[in-house]
Image (cartoon, rainbow, N blue to C red; front, side, top):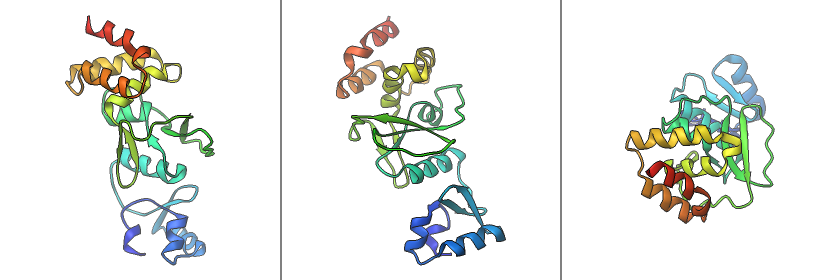
Length: 187
């Protein structure tokens, strides 16, 4: 097995580009040296890492780029919610379609990829400030109670300040939509 594939989940396309065949992948899965994580996504058996990181990399491989872990999955990553999502929430461009029971796609016409997204080597994830603002903006999906509890928890844990939340909302052009929430939390 080529070394670039040893630690991280990889796609069939990456394996093919390194000279491996689909038949080889199938034989390795049957032999137990390779694990099929999802359709078209594999990992060498025994390659351990955090479960969140693992799921995020799989989501990025399935959705392709640009895409970013967001909303409930990002809240879980930053440890500011008690909610446990059964799916990985991923922000994608509006035309993107991926059929997977493990992913919750949040399609956006204007995803603003340059604002509040931490771009790692294997996957992108919204920053805590952007995640909290997005939760208020997508309150019909997340629930306003969950969004407000996450903000209160982040403030209590001193992970964010109300000023930085308002600044993020301003950068996103959504300050008028979140101002009432921020003013209520400030009082």
